[in-house]
Length: 69
Image (cartoon, rainbow, N blue to C red; front, side):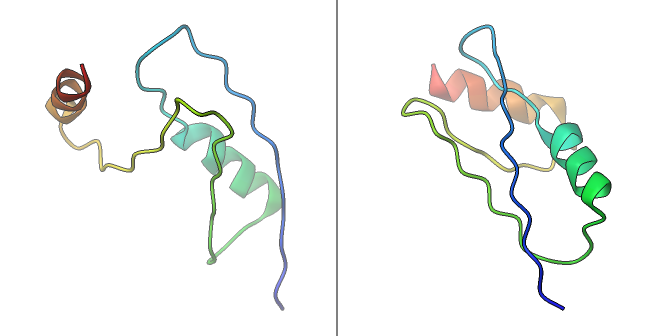
């Protein structure tokens, strides 16, 4: 059966930088009992962006922040 779920996630930050949403999104997915499917994230802010990375090496985030500066 095909089902859809919608949720608004509000994230407050202290300014420029990266904010890891993995735990928050995973928690919501667990709460609604989601299994396989499609997750679409929409950011409603003109100066925000979404990046997806594996986080296997903390240097990747430092390199990304340096490149963006």
